[in-house]
Length: 282
Length: 282
Image 1 (cartoon, chains in turn brown, red):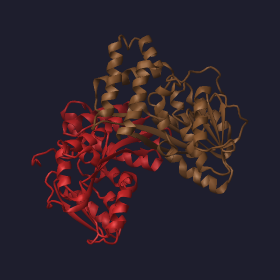
Image 2 (cartoon, each protein chain N blue to C red):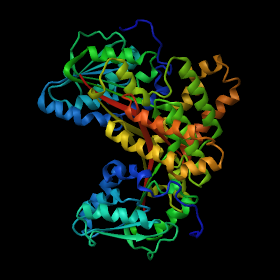
Image 3 (tube, each protein chain N blue to C red):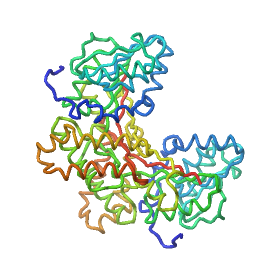
Image 4 (cartoon, chains in turn brown, purple):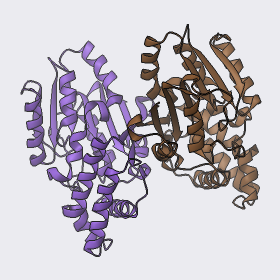
């Protein structure tokens, strides 16, 4: 059922524009899956783990560490460029080719036989895809019977952003419009269970939860604000915003970028983002 | 700075309309505070804990159990009616007057001397108040230097409700309007840090996080849907919705109530609610 022609990941892969991806860890972005991983590793000393659309791989490294010594994490992404960055994170964390391997892959057509992995995982990938249920079906295909598929997807519509600076409102308006135009889903978190059902899963196979990201401490806010300011100043977001007519002049761009800088410096500022989470028992 | 004339808690205290409050536990509604409580109890065998606006007290019981044998939780609420219910939960959990005491209190004018408690806590109280910073200031007053004030407040604007049934949209529109009209804040979670700053707290005293509620399993959805259907059929919500002109006929009421019943029965349905959380070091 996989489709061969799909949308691309709009934000792109330039490090300056996705630097907040590297803030992600298994702890802050996959806590819901860690107890399952622990139980699995107790029963199976050498589990095989597939991380799909893993980007810069900082979450993957956290999984690989937990599966030492016998487990192996296969890290995939559509982009060779970002996979190189993931390899460098893995090397810096003393992971070897026994623990982590890297392979470019399209999530709709994973280059693995049926029933290859004990765990297949993605994080904030389905919400950027135009056919999320197809990708989930493909993740299920490569997962062993008795294994699990796990996904955690942002619900961008529900983000809690404070204070409500006009430049941030404009940024969110542009961001939503360009992501939707690119095929992403602005309220993916809440639809995760329904996507799994469409992929052929029965409700009783699913454990659902919600988790959050919190950007409130100064160092966390700085990471987020830097990425967002770069995206609107130099990224695809700016280009597409101009194309669809929401950005009409450079002053708007500067208003949005400087609003993020002001936000990062304000004591009362924070950003909360809710994520839907599912664990599917195959 | 406490004010003596304030708004009331709009949803009221009828058990059928607040039955979802009794779904709340220290685990699902105050996990952010539990490590702090554990550390405190290790250092202080007899901590004093104040739970403000505790409603039916199911969270308070969880705190009291964790502070056994030496600690004591003082449970307050504006309503005598709901405090009686809290007492019955405490008795059912084998708590005695050594562990838990109950006292009606207005959160703006707590009937305790300065610096009485090691921990002062509230849950989904400030977002229903017309002067949340005054209440926080009062909570700080009764807390000992070196103690903590902890609050967790829903951000109702950010709720993730799926599927988007027309009756649920209408319910949310009425709910937001009547709560705002009653003095509540629809986006309280994201404003919690700013409320603390207004109460005179310095940013470096605050640890901020976000937590969630997830209603996705059938038994959880049933609890939520039952409360909401009762509120719109028989509660203050209906009365106020008629008063402000958003409810004009009984069919609308039935549409909203039956939408909750449909939601509770659908496999793809879920509700996520994000909460702001702060721990203030006094």
